Length: 420
Image (tube, rainbow, N blue to C red; front, side, top):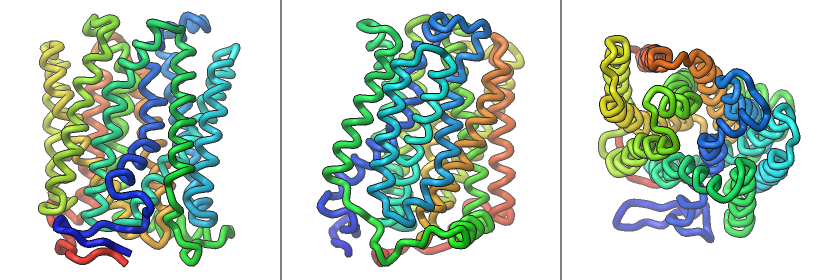
């Protein structure tokens, strides 16, 4: 089931694709979510104007309801993929995403648009679960973390570029054109997956879809200290990212007065995650997931503390905020892929269900807490920086509990042989 090379081993479970195409297709389906989250950020003032939304914070619901559907949908996608395989659930989810995208374009009211966004989120939840599951089907341990980092490095270009793409679309069309572009991208990703992506879950490893089996899989996932702990910690750090996304348009246009140039600042900050993804893919095999993610978590707490103090003292100027925010996103890039791999590592026998629960926990925590922080925006940086500090502190406390107070300690030696 494997090919060996000078660089180690490469799974053949994703044949006929080679390794580069496998990483690229995983990144492309993972990118549906950040595209759907970030591309409409420049359009939020126009959406507010179109539907006569009085409170500027309420237009954030365009993002928050999408993430609610994205988080809730993952509860069912994992068990379904463990029963019926990865491909049919992925294709069905992407079809729902595309259909909901058309409804978003045609929606005559803000309420119907929000309903379409919920359905989009549910459809995209399949891509999140399946992407993680097929990586776990093919790889394990540090190799899995390396693959996830490479995929993250590619798909992180989406949040870097998405607001700028959205701004470019609005030069030629109104805000609905952004949702049409999202729909077309979904259809293209669907076509690529349908043609090239093989089924990575053998029939012999599929689980019967019964209430008992689903409950047992949920129980195994939720009662595993490492899986649940790192899911909660990932939810904490993802809350910071979601709060930033919800508030970014207001932060850059109202606090720092960047106007239509805010996508450039947004892109510059997101580069930190891309750099971290590349670095992690190169060093995780040597240092291990715990050493890297725990160091990044402590670094993130330091940066969050400095940012909060700067906002409180009134010297969080735009250049200072940019430097600190890039550092925080760099730390996030080192944490999230490794937290994902650590949570999934013990769950290879129920990868679909474990992936769905991990995704639901992290997304629902992140979107709920991030939305609360975003709704507290008051024209200053204090609500956001306070929330970011508290979320990061909570994540560190959880990791300390999970690891019994022993940070930076690898639990297993480097595995030199491929998984069977």
